[in-house]
Image 1: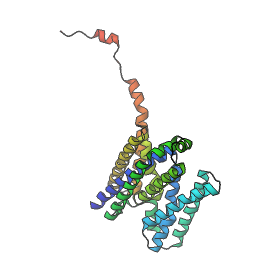
Image 2: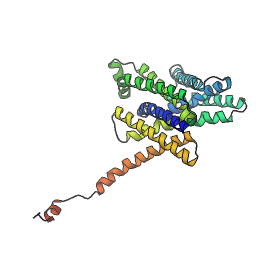
Image 3: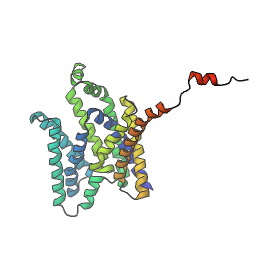
Image 4: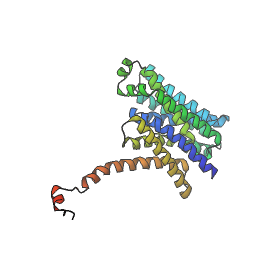
Length: 282
C-alpha cells in the first residue's frame, strides 16, 4: 500500500531526527521540556485548525512560544527551570483545551492532534520531514563540540570560547524541531516516547555520543516498522503502536543488557585438570 510506504518513510525520517536530538535530551536531562513542548503545540495547532492555516505552522508557533516563554520566566521571573516549564505547560495545555472546546465538531481533529496520523503522511509531508531531518542533523553536527563542553561544565565551555547560553538555545531549538516534526507521526501526547525511548535503549550499549545517536536512529526506525506492522495486523492506532513499540524496545534492551552478565557467569569454563584428562591424539 502506498500510504503505508509513505508512513514508514516519514516515520523513519522522524526516527532519525529523534534519535539524534533524543540522545542530547537524555544526556542533558531535558525530558520534561520535550513533554512540555509537545503540549505547548496544542493551542497553536488548534488555532491553525480553526482558522484554516497549515497545522505544522501552528504547531511550530506554539512550540516556539513555549520555549521562549520558558527562557523569559527563568531569566526575568527568577524561577527554576522545571518551575518555568511546569507553569507554561499547564497554561498552554489549558489554552489548547479552551480553543478545542469552543469550536464545534472538533473531535476528529483533536484525536489527530493528540495521537498523530502517520498513515495520512503525503509526499509533500515527506519533503518537509526530509528538510527538518537534514537541518537537525546539520545543527547537531555543527554544535557538537559546544554541546559536549556544556554538558561537562558551563564554565569549561566559556573558557574554551563557547557561549553556553547560545548553545542551550540551540539545543532547545533542536528539541522544538524534533517535537514539531514528530507531531504528525505520533501526536503531541506520544512524541516524547519516540524522542526518549530509542536514545535510552541505545545508551545501554555504547557511551560514545555519535555511535549512540546512530544506534538510537536505527532502533527508532525499527520501532516505526514494528508499530506499523502491529497496527496493520491488529487494527490498532498507528501512532500509538509506534510509540508503544519504541518503549517496548527500550525495555527489551534494558532486559537483555541486564541478563548478559548472568549468561557469561554461567558459561562453563575449561580447567587445567580437564585439559589433562583429554586423551592425546594418535
